[in-house]
Structures are given as structure tokens and as C-alpha cells.
Length: 160
Image (tube, rainbow, N blue to C red):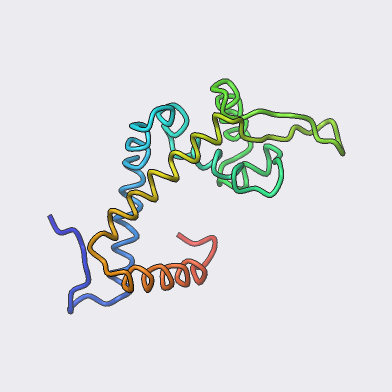
């Protein structure tokens, strides 16, 4: 099976788009999440991509978030975010408290277990990146990192 790569007859745009498709398919197949499950508790919390995006959004937030903010951050509707919230609270990965400015609103944060799970998945992902870079020279790895960061910064937001 053809695994990609840049050949002289493929335009860079086509090669990059193909690489992005392969990455997306790999993620949709939950390979990273299944590998993370080997690290123990990650099986429960990262079993589905939306659950992990939820935990990741809480970890990356500068403050505790409301359910509507989580929904927006992970690209789901509010009812789906509410269901995820209930599941993650039941699993002990997320906890809630009231908003000091308005007690009608609930603010969400990771529990210690939720933070451990996010850290385990990220560590596993970093190991996968390090493995993938194994055949690169240090200079090639630095160049890829700079160019990939630049590419992501230039990516049109809200497009497919």
C-alpha cells in the first residue's frame, strides 16, 4: 500500500493534503487513544475523541470554563457538551464549582485524575512524534518543527 511521501510528480499542495488526510485517518481510527490506553487509566477517558478534546480544552484554558465555553472550544453543541460533562464527572475526570460572579453558572476544571490522563496521552503522543522523527537528522527535525508551526499558524480557521 502506498504510504505517501513526496515524489517528483506530486505537487507540494497535493502531497501535504495527502499527509493531512493520513494523519486524520490515523486519529479517527483512535490509534493514539488505543496506544494511550496501554498507559493505564487513559482507556476510560480517551476512549472517544470528543472526550479527550474536552479534557484537553480544560487543560489549555486560562481559567475554569462554563459548559457553553467547552462546547465552543471542542466544536460540539451544548447538549453534547452537557452529556460529556456528566460522563466525565461520573468518571472522576472533571469537577464543577459555581461561578463566583454568578452562581447560576457552573465552572468546570480537571480533577487530578483528569490531569494525569491528559498528561499520559500527551506523553504518549510525544513519544510517537519522537519515534516518527527517528530517521531525521537534528537539523531536519528542527526545520520540520519550524515549518509545521508556520503552516499551522497560516491555516485558515473554520475550513475543512
